[in-house]
Amino acid sequence: MAMVDVTVMGAGIFGLSVAYACARRGARVRVVEPLRIGAGSSGGLVGALAPHMPEKWDAKKQFQFDSLIMAGEFWAGADQLSGLASGYGRIGRLQPIASERLLELSHQRAESARELWQGLARWQVVRCSDFGAWAPDSPTGYLVHDTLSARLEPRQAMASLAAAIAALGGEIVIGDALAQGQVVWASGYHGLRALSQELGAEIGGGVKGQSALLEYAAGDVPQLFADGLYVVPHCNGTVAVGSTSERDFTQADSTDQLLEDLLAKLWARFPVLAGAKVITRWAGVRPRGRKLAPILGAHPGRAGHFIANGGFKIGFGMAPKVGEMMADLLLNQDDSGIPDAFRVEANL
Image (cartoon, rainbow, N blue to C red; front, side, top):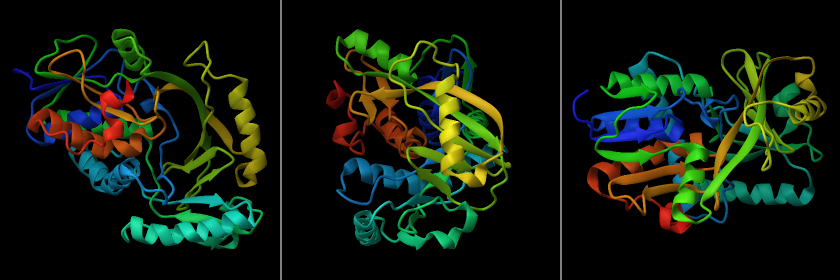
């Protein structure tokens, strides 16, 4: 490739989304990844894209809402360019309502969602019986059903996005390559650790998660969330479940008894999945900034270098808009779309 306008260091979801947004605008991009596409947490199994509660609205929640609304067009465009399937689908989500107090609160949130979600998605209270055997048990007999939540198959989605970048003339290098032009560091939890050391401040690190993939054709049903468990039906006859959250760990990529305990909890909580075969187990480390939010903007110590990191557990949902806002910054020197809480200086 000729002289590069933007080099992205890291081929996780933030890195590829930034590269894709820049390439779509005509920039010459290079992605440099030392291991493989989605080598970190972006290569996991679950693939849940889910919104914050429709209440106590702020810039972070609005940013995420915008990104979730953008996601359908984003992934359809990538899939069309790549000829691959990301597995994206806006399938919604069911959550049990555990008490009468929470039932009343859920009705209030339904009213809030009508305004905050602008008629583009719904947060509604439904009966468990509306979803038959797939419905999680709920003490009140009612569930929250939102229609904003979506899913994708992480590994397929990463492959599609990488191929879309290549189709737009971008270059993806596995290994080492020269960083040319403006440089974006989207290097996951290793990058947060390195940045913390470089700046002498605790910027963030990583939290290990373990998940599993079951052989189970759930059909056209929403994802489930209950007791800290995500149950995500994919379109290829599998269901992903996860995940653990481990601040302290010694082996980043190995599964252990914590995953087996999670599966035991799953069988008890969701009997519809009892007996489903576990076909894949996964472990990896998710980047977690000190303040949980994405960390976006200019590198404070290196001219011409930028950061796109963080976004603990919400990376896939935030990625479409993160890519666009970083492209605005890189190509137009416009950072007005980045919320103050996401800026690098706010996370130091």
